[in-house]
Image (cartoon, rainbow, N blue to C red):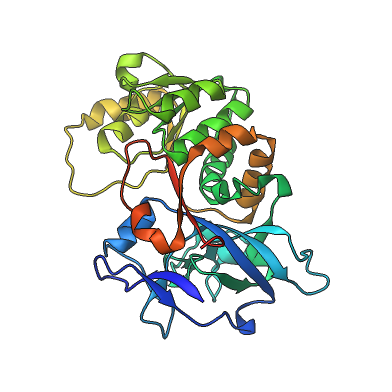
Amino acid sequence: MKALGVTPGKKDSLELLDIDEPQESEGSVLVEVIAVGLCGTDKEIVSGQYGEAPPGSDHLVLGHENLGRVVSAPDGSGLSEGDLVVGIVRRPDPVPCAACAQGQWDMCRNGKYTEHGIKGLHGFAREHYRADPDAMVKLDPALSDVGVLLEPTTIVAKAWQHTEAIGRRAFFEPKVAVVTGAGPAGLLAALLGVQRGLEVHVFDRVTDGPKPDLVKDLGATYHNDTLTDSGVLADVLIECTGVPSVVMETITKHGLDAVTCLTGVSSTGKRLPVDVGAANREAVLGNDVVFGSVNANRTHYEAAAEALAKADAGWLKRLITRTVKLEDFSQAFERQEDDVKVVLDVKGS
């Protein structure tokens, strides 16, 4: 079968491969892949920055954002032929650590977890894969056109879940939320904020293209100025860019008792002048909380599936700005001005 893979650590080694069909030992459920979404992680793997092939393999099949249909499943699995499913990206470490043993592999304590298309497991950019029922989530059939957005939604579903858990440490009645970055993660974070009934402000650099209208049509407010200049003082801030200057703003420019969640992974080497004393004073006197969040466990996949099912399907579909056939994969990695989410069409190739 066809698959899109790289030689990990080798820059620009991305190629279309012929690989064997998945073995039954890989899982009891056979899935036909429909689509795979691309993100910054995939681009970094293609550039050779990281990525780890499965044991015994020289290549790593790419793709962690995914959507597929069940071809066959055993009786009693809760899945049937034709069901729409998404494979869970991270799998618990084999020990397992205390967190993985509780199903919280997103909080793995020893780093021995694996991740489809990233670390030690082939990804979903292939015609078929196998997994066990507990490694996938069933979706509402109405999400057939947008279900590939589930995985990025899980990231912000976790961010919101943890933010709310932290807020409940004391009095917590948020009214204003800020999201930095209007890429897929930022827009989906804004969606979840709007669904919570909050006044949502989204910050990004662009002044035209689809992003401002997507934010407006969500019922949120779009800004292309800085958080500092805007004067917005939020109770909750979800940072989705990883840009150091923006990260610092979300940490220091907000209301009292604010909770800031950092989800954007920053490049290293960038230095900023920071008044640590002033930042500390504001954090202590303001009861601030700043925390980082990565990946997601099954509860976040289920919360994300519920959020997408409640969302306007037309709005979600507008996030997918380009769909590229698998054999034309190189085009998918060529950045276009109005790109929001680029998706590989696997089934139609």
